[in-house]
Image (cartoon, rainbow, N blue to C red; front, side, top):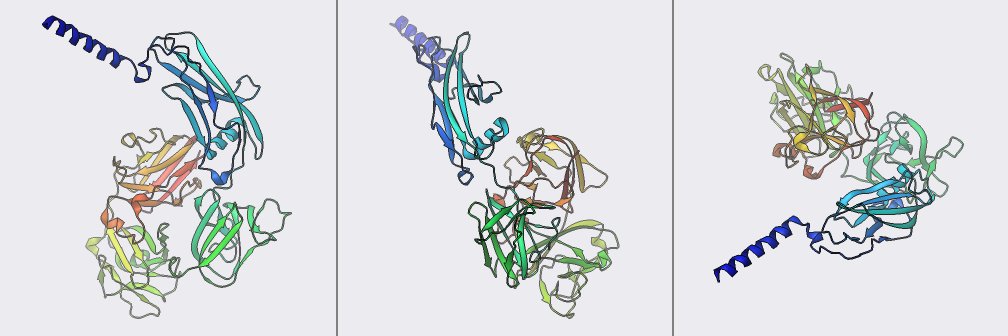
Length: 498
C-alpha cells in the first residue's frame, strides 16, 4: 500500500512541476489548428479632438496555434498604408507574449497618423494591420491581415495668451499673459482686466496666429494680416474669470470678487535692498500668495515691509507691531504713511537665506518667513531624462560655487520632465515643477513652482489648494542636447537647447 501511495505522490509532484514550467496560457498543450484571426473594432474611424480621451480603435486577435508543442506564441502587430506591402510600417506590438489586443484613444491614434504617416487635417488614410505569430522553436509564421481607414485632425494650440490694452502685459507679444490649459482647446485665466481691448495669441512673441472676435461674436482664428483684426472689449476695470473654448468659439468673461486679489503685484522693500522695490513672484496656484527668496548678507538685514506699487510709500503691507520679529506673522494694510511699523531681521539672524510668503487675503493677511537650507542635490526625473521615471535612479544635476544653483548638460529625449529634491519613493516629497502643466521650455530664465508635499508648514501656506494632487511637468518636444540652470532660492530655471 505504501508503494502505491509513493507512486501517487511522485505523479502529483511531476504534474505540479510540469505546470510550473508551462505558462498558464499554454496549459492546453495541443491548441489544435486554431486559425490566427485579427479583427478591428471599426473599419471607418473619424477622429475628433473634442473626444480626445475616448477610445478610437482596438485591434484584437485569437491565439492561433502552437502546433501542440506547449511553447509560447509571440505576436508582432504592424500598421502600414494600404497597398504598401507594409513598407515603412508602424510597429504597434513587437514580440509580445500573452497579449491579444492593442487599443488607442483618439489623441494617441491621431498622433500616430500625423507623426508616422504624415496625415493632414481631414485626410482619410486607408491602412492595413498585419499580425504575425511565431511559436518558440518553430520556423512557421502565422499571419492575419485586416483593413480600416482613419480620418485625422490638426490639434488645436496647446498654449494661449491674453494680449491687449485691457491685459496686464498690454500689447507686447513678448509680455502676453499666459492662460491655463484646462483641457484640449479650453483655456482659463483669473485676474484683473481694465477697460480696454484684448484678443488672444497662440505663441509668445508672435502676433499670428491669433483668436479675434468674429462677426458672430465668437472666437475666430486669424492666421493672416489680411483677415479682420477685431478685438474683444472690456467695459470696466474688474477682476474677471476668462474662459476660451476654441472648439465652440465661446468666450466667457465673469466678474468675480473672491477669486482674485486686489493687487497682482507686490514688492519687498527694506534695508537689504537699500530701500529699493524688488518685485515678488505671484504664486501660480494661489494668486493671493507672493513669494520672495533672498540671501541676507551679514550686516544687510534690518527693517522691511511690502509695497503694492513700485516706488510708492502708500498702500503698503506692514507689521502690526513695531520692530516685529521675522517670525511675527501679523500684518496690517496701511493706505497712507502711518503707522509705519516694520519687521526687523537682526544682525545675528543674517548670513543666511530666507524664503518669504505673503498672503494678502483681506482680513486674513499673513507674513510667513523662514530660514531656507538649500538641498544638497537636485535630481531630474521623467521620460525625457536618462533614468526615465525610476525615482531611485533619478539623474543628479551638477553643483556650482553657488549652493543654490545647479546645472546639467546632456541629452534629453522628447517627453516629460520635473525635478525632485529628495527622491522620496512615495513621490510626496519636495519638487520643482513648471508654473503650468505641459509647459514647453521658454529657452530663457523663467519662474518655476516649488512644492513640498511632505512639509505641513509649507502646505499650510495654501488655504484653498491641496498641493498633494499637483503634478505638473515640462514637455520636451524636441530631443537633443540641453543646458539646464536651476536656482532653488529664487525658484527660477532655464532649459536651453544647445
